Image (cartoon, rainbow, N blue to C red; front, side):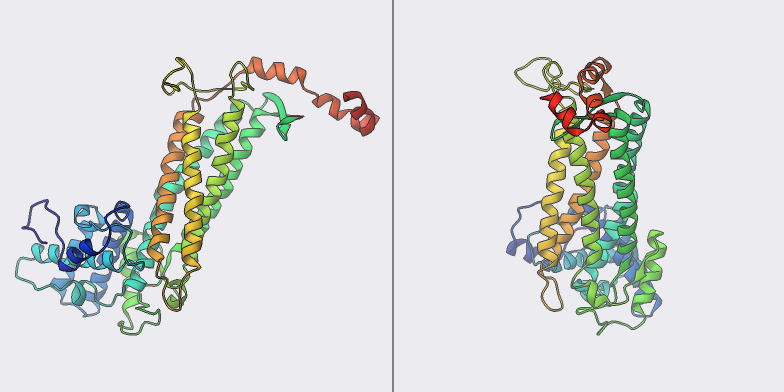
Length: 412
């Protein structure tokens, strides 16, 4: 399928059309961030090939121009394939090559015969391209979306903790009364955990900057111009403004992508913190008349279709589900990365899509949770004061003076 220049009708070639008939259409499409990263990768590859004399200059520039449109998301309708395809992602890779070849020919002022594999895919293989594309997408997501979302939630928690630094409350272990603490300490702890998670985000982002492009089909560089990897890295840095480097051993990254695993790990770490936070807020806001009632929830709309006026921690439950999804996706990533056989992980596409989904889902959820629940969250000072008066915390402290057994006997 092709189209005339200037129309919005999807454009792709015969291989993609064949793949549409051979693979199921369920499961949505390849994530848009991966497709944009493909555009960036193809742009850098075209310019590297032009610089090396592997492609004629005008052809390389038209390919790069078409690739930049993919990077900008302008041709997203031309990528119809879903995630259930060959596990190395080869059908989508060729789909990208076909779309760029067709569009590059349209952009040329003279007739150019641009082949999707001979020209657009020059010095590339699906096996080194997919990990490279995934690293580009994830490094960008961590920098521009996921990291800032966690920082936003941490800041809101820090502000809430600062407002209530001196607000005493009852601590609880095993959901039973324990020593006293403060609202500030409770919520400041979550902020500190997120700040530490942000340090792990930075480490994961650094690991993703190492890409295997130039490794070829089995990671040895066989069949690839010997200077392509270095030329590609230079162009990729110029295109993204990020300090990408060539992987020292592409064959390792192309089989077990530990940088991808680190990105999944940071999503899981954040999900553990956020899951604990959301569940604690649900408990502390329980009631409000017949529960703990320590927190006053914002009114974010009807909490019930049958109980008028009921306010529920809806954004906490939303975030809970997102965190569960991230943790389920991590199980998929572990299964995929540990199933690589010899020189190729034939389920890499599954892991790549799972990590992209985890980071993008949790980033959006965290931002909404911070804005809709944490920012307007309040405490019920009367409820806290009443509970502190009834708390056995002062009694527990007497054990240092009169002994554990004496205090325990008195409490019976």
